[in-house]
Length: 186
Image (cartoon, rainbow, N blue to C red; front, side):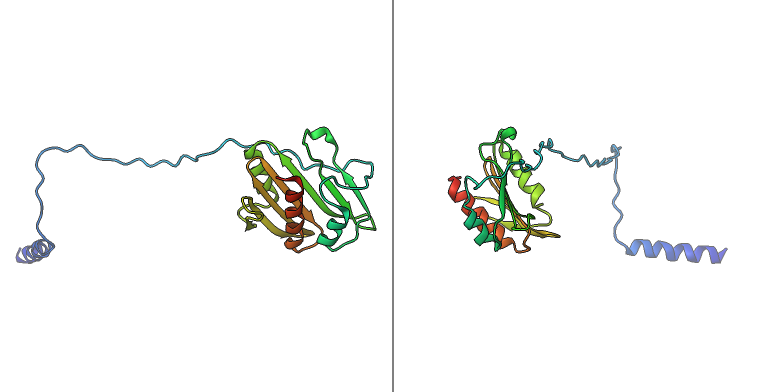
């Protein structure tokens, strides 16, 4: 019997050494915490599809001179096509082709809803993977090299400009973007 008492005494001493025991009187309601994660979603914005070139050739883009496009992108221009006016935008998209008729430069100007403008830019140069851009002043978006070229996309209010090039340097797209915004007075 003595063996059973010694361990109990030692256990009692060890528990007493841990600090005073606080006696709680009265009945308290049990507290439970329920944590739930509810994703906050914003309504998705319908992004219009990128414009497509219309069949007939034109001699110039209304907001960027052919020679400026050639100088900024570093390639001579063989032909130019514009998007159709069916999209309801005030400025057609311009498509510049090389001398051997490969697409080298595309300019898409969107004017309208600010949420759509931002969504267009984020689709062209996703925030998570592109380099942040803020040129010209007041415009925000991104730039990045692509597998077959580069893109520079910025928005300000309800305006967005997306420039893609067959060149890997985003600076070429940036130069075109700044000229387009300046020429259009956006």
